[in-house]
Each structure stands twice: as structure tokens, then as C-alpha cells.
Image (tube, rainbow, N blue to C red):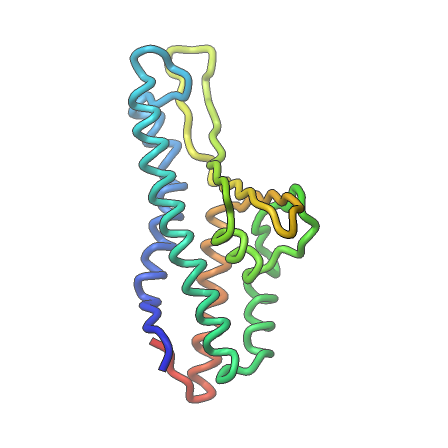
Length: 186
């Protein structure tokens, strides 16, 4: 028997990431949170940026690790074609993100690998109404992951919402296909 995956918890964390991205614009606008708003708004911006990055990074690492453990630990029990079909289906019409450098194919497995092995992470931010008193900065949903493999640097910009939808689709396909084959994963 392998690890217990708690896929209900994974689904919940995917939902939270999507909701954080969807709510960021409205929240930051209403709270007047703006990057570079010195001297009074600086602490509000830093607090918001640190909180959201900590949640998004932590959840993405946990989700990515569970997906990779599932792939590796169940490889002998679940047919490889199930994983391949799930990966293809999960990214078929969803632009996961953009590979800026590194020359790798972006799929579910590689997005999880890059999430786990990133040595530097930056969230993407958008500032609106920059020249007015109602300026605000919100999370765009971009998650920039940087690292290196074999001394070659890579940079992947993931779209958090697309990534969440892809991971959810991938897991749904793998788990339902495995269940059809009589394999029940918890």
C-alpha cells in the first residue's frame, strides 16, 4: 500500500488557488492595496504579497508532490496509457503557461516537476489606475518559476487558474479510469 493522497484536500486547495486569483483584483481595489505606494500603503502591499505567495506556493508544492507521487508509486498498477491520456486531455485546450527558457515540453508532469524544483518563485502582478489616487495592484494569476537543470537555467510562467483546472481534470481522469479497472486510490 502506498501513501494516502487525500485527493479531497487536493481538490479543496485547487479551488482555493482559483478563488484567490479570481478575488485578488476586487479585494486589492477595495482595500487600496498598491505596490510601490509609499509611505502609507507599503505595509499593506507587503502583507498582502507575502500572504498570497505563501498560500499559493505552499498549496502548489503540496499538490504537485501528490500528483508526482501518484504517478510514480502507481505506475505498476495503473496502465501507462491512462496517465498519457489523462495528461493529453488535461492540457488539450488549456494554455497551462509559457516556457520562457529551458526548452522542455509543458505537460502536467513537467509543470509539477518545475513547481517542486523551482529555486525562485515570483507571482505576476498588475497595477491598475497607476496615475490616480485609486491605484491598486492585484495578482494576475501568473506564477513564474525559475530553476536550472544540468546547469541550464529554465523559466516557466504558469497560469495558476489553468494549472488548477488541468490538475483537477488530470486527477479526475486518472482516478476514474483506475476505478473502472478496479483500482481504488485514497
